[in-house]
Length: 498
Image 1 (cartoon, rainbow, N blue to C red):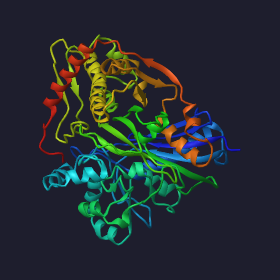
Image 2 (image 1 turned 90 degrees about the horizontal axis):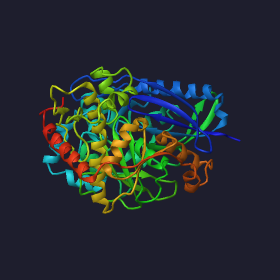
Image 3 (image 1 turned 45 degrees about the vertical axis):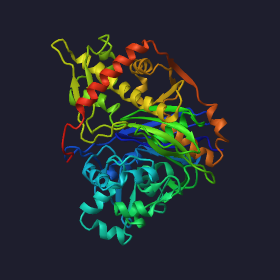
Image 4 (image 1 turned 90 degrees about the vertical axis):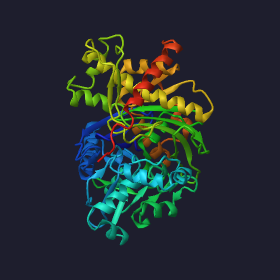
């Protein structure tokens, strides 16, 4: 009898493999970082081949760590950084260029042109997305236009496009399966979330040949078999990282919300079978789909720089040697001393969507210290998330009573308390923080009967700590007003992104 489900969690800065048992407990975890490439201002790239190699390595390491074989694994679930765009040769499996990462802003001018031509509203109606360089459609068009011979080869059926899930599926199955799921497809600007299919009008608008696109299959269904150590293990769960985290947090009912604190911050609210159109510049996205069932939808607010601001403190300012030191440094002062750090390093996401904003540190005095900057950095994560939650409440027409949180930065107690204080609702941290990987595992396990149903999954969810708000609401409003002033000063700072 199989004892585990394997989750492959391919993130923006590292690849991980985690083995979960039937109680949703971590039985082994392996992680490996990979290089970030910044070839020009506003450009962010990954080596897709390096991503695949690191994912292979951690898969093997997780098996060794738990002393298990592929025959002990019931299924594989994949979750991934979304929107990151890969274009590869169908015959050799070789990428034609580095992957263009979701943070990359090189196509902002293309989005401006399409917006000026009046296409933004039609795109929003079909895809649920704002017209922004964040998404995959303009990235793919850029590759087809700028890699020599790529467009002609794509139209001839020689090339394959995919987000990172499709790239991993292709490699795991030895090129036998080119597929994605609705949660990832819904992030491309090419997918109609209402018809649950690639859209010819959008493909024509972005000049994308249909032949390069992957098949779209339900999130919990058959994605082929991975050949591992002579065994064939079914791949039966696929979801973009933020939708997977919503599922892993057991937010299965409409009205339940979670926030993931990773490289960016992503707050999702389950809206059930109804795609709710946002009037506050949030995204309407597909959350997941079961085989034979209708899609579940979510409202989403995307913050581009969340935990990445801590990496900047470590690698850019060299204020700390490890990310874990930031909490202690920020705790040396009772507050940020009037400082506001707006981490618009790659522009601003929801609800501003300003590709031309840039980072700003405001309120500096002679008394400002590196501890104040560290505190302002942590507060910037909480401020951005609070902005998104307020917009989400307006869209949903309801006030949330709690926020479930996950991701690496939730281990920072100070950040979680700041977040509760700004929101005015309890922030609930579960015992298992790896809910992104867990969500992918659950989707995979449900497809093969490893778990029976959503109730089976929800029974595994357990609370580690609840952070109750302690800040007076008037003071929280003052802090949010100060943040809003700082954000306005960061907007439109540059006139170009490449």
